[in-house]
Length: 99
Image 1 (tube, rainbow, N blue to C red):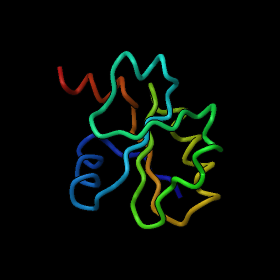
Image 2 (spheres, rainbow, N blue to C red):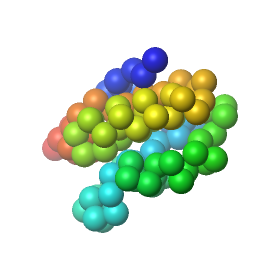
Image 3 (cartoon, one colour):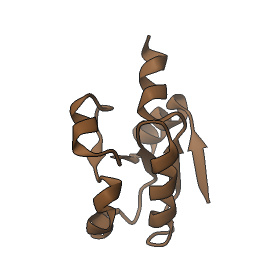
Image 4 (cartoon, helix red, strand yellow):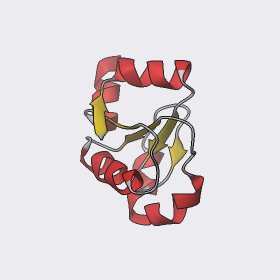
């Protein structure tokens, strides 16, 4: 099951459980800004990254607004039993909390 989480929960998972933060946006979107510490696995090429999904860490996906990250998590759900999360509101929600 994929759980949508907020920024606070994302930061907790990254810090306390050494989670993996995956940006599924395309290259040109990442060039506009990203969340520190991310690994880039664009949804359009996500199948190429199957072997890079870690077996023992929670994985948090994010995109621009939250839709593609949910879709990507659904794909990854077929590959792993690890806890999978999607950042609610995506990158736009994340940066709006900074202001």
